[in-house]
Length: 202
Ligand SMILES: C[S@@+](CC[C@H](N)C(=O)[O-])C[C@H]1O[C@@H](n2cnc3c(N)ncnc32)[C@H](O)[C@@H]1O
Image (cartoon, rainbow, N blue to C red):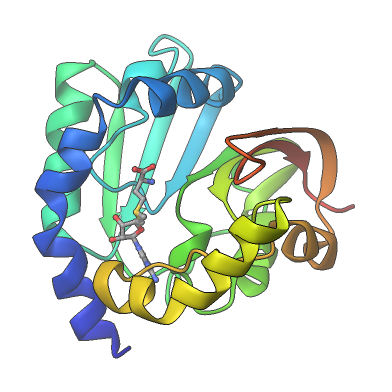
């Protein structure tokens, strides 16, 4: 899908993502992963700022990136409501240029599904994160249940057309190829949801 079309698709979904902030299951997983964030945080694909309630606001300064102007507006409101110190960059992750080793923590939630090549995106996280920093991911991918994963693969073309994101990402393979050093993985919801704490490769 062309980038301009994808951006418009996400612009139009901002209300859906704002409503999703009330999803209790997602809230529990977000809280579990985001409580590990500290210092200078880069949150990629920040969306409607659904993670802002869970940051330790005394311990983080967040830079939120998203290519959708509507998502950025919504994330700004969320940062203000939850009093998280934050600045925002409206940019495509593929075009984003940041200094190497410049963040203590990189956060991505439910976003690897959106990028054309998530391994390339993770290699960027690797370079932007300080070598003693932490990379926190909450992502969705293929289930370990064969019937569910078969269904995910079958519906992916339609799913991607409607939502802009893929439901058939093989997170295990993506993480393995990314060279991130994984410290901890938890999986939920028939193993579709991954909570991952990792460090950049040396
Ligand atoms: C599926 S939503 C997830 C939003 C949020 N992280 C959450 O947990 O609810 C993906 C977000 O990534 C943004 N996004 C997708 N592709 C992008 C890209 N190439 N560059 C920057 N942002 C992108 C979308 O605009 C959207 O806000």
